[in-house]
Image 1 (cartoon, rainbow, N blue to C red):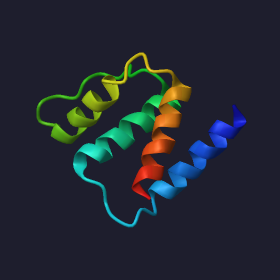
Image 2: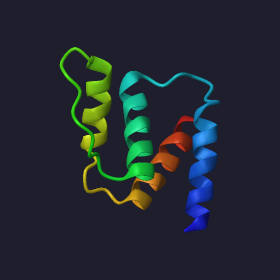
Image 3: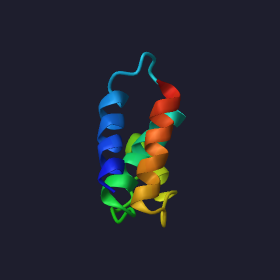
Length: 84
């Protein structure tokens, strides 16, 4: 368990040093996996139509509803490694 958390923290640090900025869809996936891995299922109120970025982030995170936090952390690690 602590190995997963250490690898997750390392991946979070590595995500800030990617050689290229990922496309928006990939950035949303990174955000959603991070939120699911750290906070669990989305319980926040959905942003209004005028907040398009917030709404996209909310939708991305909400799409992972029911995904275990450890599974989300592992997917995050794998995604960041594939982008490095």
